[in-house]
Image (cartoon, rainbow, N blue to C red; front, side, top):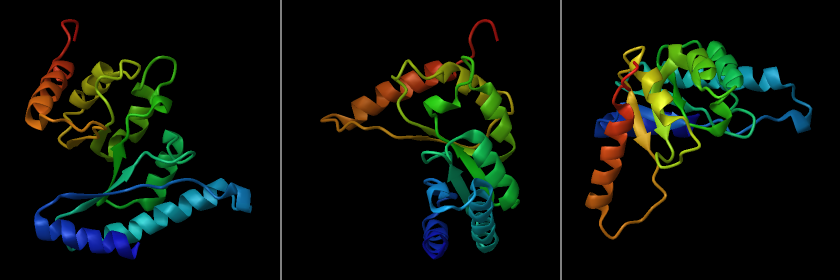
Amino acid sequence: METTKRFVELAADIGAVGVKVRPNGLHEAAGVPKEKTLDQIGLALRECGEFADGYPVSIWVEVHGPETMHPPNIHHIMEAADHPKVGVCWSSNATDVVDGSASEYFNLLKPWMQSVHITELTNTAYLWRELFRLLREPDYAGYCLAELPYESAEPERFMSYYAALWRELNRPAADE
C-alpha cells in the first residue's frame, strides 16, 4: 500500500490520472477464507483511495490474478473498497466470456469501470467488437491501455496499423 501511495504522488507529479494495481490471487491454501481475502484487498484499496483523495489520481484495480481475475471476485473487492477514487481496469481476459458474451461480467463491473486493458486486438478469440460496443453503451469516458508484446523496427508504422484496427473495432456495426 505504501508503494501505491508513492505511485499516486508520482502520477500526480507527472500529470497521470490513474495508478493501476493488481490483486494476484487468494490465500485459501493457507486456510484464509476467500471472502476474508477479498475484503482485505478491498479495505486496502479503500485506504489507497482515501490517500488519493488529495490528488487528481484514481486507483485502477486490474481484473487480474489466478482467482481474483474472476469478475464476481472483483465485484466483491469493489464493494468492500467502496471509495469513489477506486475503480476497475477491465483486463480483456478469456474468462470474461460467459456463454459467448462478455456482457454479463462487464455489466457486473460497469459501475466502477475507469480503464480498459487491451491485451491483443489481433487475438480473434476475444470479443473485441462486443467489448467496444459495451464501452460505447454507458458512454465510457475512461482510458484504453494497450499491452503490445511486440518490438518493432518501425514502431510508428506498427502503431498506425494498430490504431487503425482499434478505430475499426470501435466503429459501430451496421446493426447497432
